[in-house]
Image 1: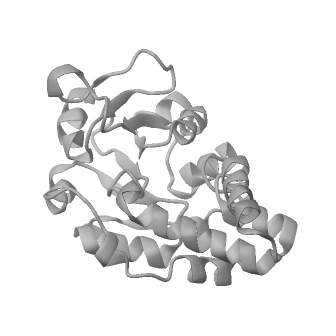
Image 2: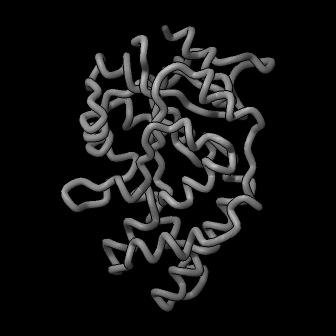
Length: 233
């Protein structure tokens, strides 16, 4: 790794535990929106919400492409809830921004207003040099959120980072989603999987991953990244 890496961070289930309560709130609101907008039953709306998420990386993309939904309205309606009340994150994340060498960039398929509120809640907003939310993940007028390889390559160009093997010495994606990391590896990122339930026997620290060629390392917590950065260098 070069002396000054650029760390690209996913948000949900990477920097905070969205599965604790926030994902349930978002899923519920998205299903409500699909049900009302398309005038269909709730089971069908819930199925469609999940199907578009699996196919496109974001439910929003399917609704825009196939049903003409207004993206801004959808994002506002589905993320309009008391985020701080549902937020769950580790303590000490403020210190991560200071302890981890290099520039930090947020890369999330969530909307920017929601991402900013989460970052403020966990005390990390000021540590990010730039934030790429779903609104910023468009190419030639088309939505291209993670895991789009084309978008990830364009992001390297935008951040003036080299691609390919040279790029993996500078750009690192930290994410909990393997498909996102697989795409990032193809685009030219080093990759770190956040996998809280399996990061090493006996509570060990960050370790190399050999089972998947597109993963360079995995951690139980982003708080382990400073130690990982020292090892990679």
